Image 1 (tube, rainbow, N blue to C red):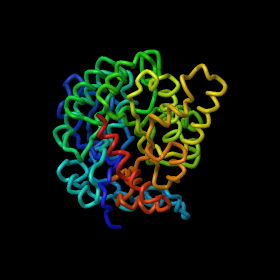
Image 2: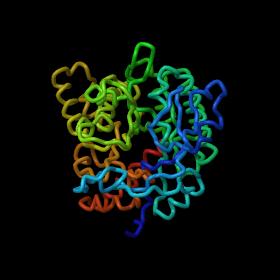
Image 3: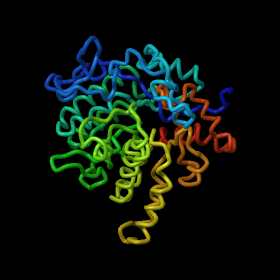
Amino acid sequence: MSTPAYPIYDADQHYYETPDAFLRYLPKQFSKEFQYVTINGRTKLAVAGMLSEYIPNPAFEVVAAPGSHEKWYRGENPEGLSLREIGGKPVPSDAAFHNGPAHLKMLDSQGIHASILLPTLASIIEERLGDKPDAIAGLFHSLNRWVQDEYGFTNGRQFPVAAVNLANLDLALQELDFVIKAGARVILIRPAPVPGLRGGRSFGFKEFDPFWARIAEAKVLVALHTSDTGYDRIYQWWTAGGAGETRPFEKDAFKEVLDVVLGRPIQDSLAALVCHGVFDRHPGVRVASLENGSAWLEPLLKRLESAFHKMPKEFKENPVDTFRRHIYIAPFYEDPVKKVIELVGLEHVLFGSDWPHPEGLAQPLDFFKDIGDLTPHEQQMVMSSNLKNLLEMR
């Protein structure tokens, strides 16, 4: 289709990290925590001394073609093909997958004015190094500096997220100050409990108020993007006795129904922010749910409404109203976007293509085909105005 007259803002594009992304600025004391190793002629990743199969090709010399899994995610797979079969042959890595200027040219060819940019391999780090917060901080700082070098935080069209881990709050605040000063407009945190010596705890607890206060003061957006949240252990309780690690491209029907990858982590994370009072104490905070879809949304809002009527004194207001004021949703292309608008309001729905990942759209503007039932004004809000306004918060 032809590009609309208004600028398109994509809330969910990605880069594939080169090994240098994590190693260029990594302090030497953490070098053994994140190593690229060669096994039988193939590059693999060892994290905390353990060989990982989380991403089979962590150097990304070849990748699944952009959008090649679309039919699988649309449920158009009557032959029951695997992701590997339905995706076809992998393609060589392209400069636009990991280089700022090349990515800008790709945005031009796609008809996209601006995009949030998210990492790919970085999602492996926090679950495997949860007991080593200093190492996580070192790896994220190296990644953020690599992003600053290769993309920049201030060119007005590419908005790379800055990754921050909250396990060591002092280091988190130090990193947050660094990336805000560098010009970052979007901060990425994992939608999962914050690890600690006594187990996980909510990032909505008051102990993390200095972080949220700085977020509100700087008027930056917080992104909660699907990741390795550790919820895979729920699936493993039923299937493998709690052994092994999550492998995102290995699917089975039970895991799909259990929904431990997309549904439960984001529901719990957003519920924690609402129920533990982050938005009450820091009304300037805005949070975007990216690549988590929206199938979980209506049940969560119903549970929040129910909790309010059972325990009204636990909330300063109806928590559904709080949710709708502070949280933004990027539905999948296969989701009913009109229903999402009904649930959270037109101004809180974002377009995200997930390019160049195989589960996303090969051509981002194909999203218009899935929102043909929206009015032109509604389409413009979803495809442009909503994210533009969030990124320009001042």
